[in-house]
Image (cartoon, rainbow, N blue to C red; front, side, top):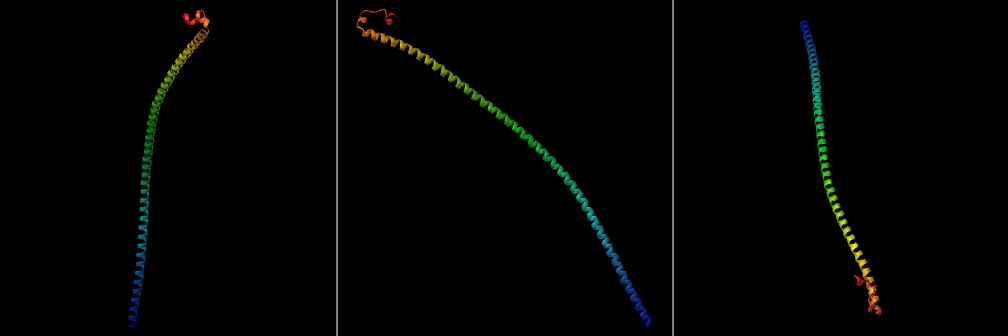
Length: 168
C-alpha cells in the first residue's frame, strides 16, 4: 500500500506537473495570442492612421489650392479695381488741369488785353502830351515874340509883317 500510495502520489505529482506545464503552455499560447492580437491591432491602427493622414493631406492640398485660387482671384480683382480707380483719378485730374489751364488762359488773355489797352491809352496820352508840348513851345515862341514886341516901343507903333500871331 505504501507503494500504491507512493504511486498515487507520484501520479498526482506528475498530473499536477503536467497540469502546471499545460497551464504554462496555455498561458504562453494565450500570451502569444494576446501579443499577436496586440500587434495586429497596432498594425491596423497604424494603417488606419496612415490612411487618415493621406486623406487629411489630400484635403489640405485641395483646400490650399482653393485658397490659392481664391487669393489669386482676389488679387486680380483688387488689381483691376485699383487700375480702374487710377484711370478715373487720372481722368479727373486731367479734366481739372484742363479747366484750370482754360481759366489761366482766359485770365492771361484778359490781362494781355488790359495791358494792351493801357499801353494804347498811354501812347495816346503821350501823343496828346507831345502835341500839347509842341503847341506850348509854339505858344512860348509867340509869347517871346510878343514880349520882344512889347518891349520895343518903336515896333509897337507900327505893326510889322513879322508878327505871325496877327495873320492867323
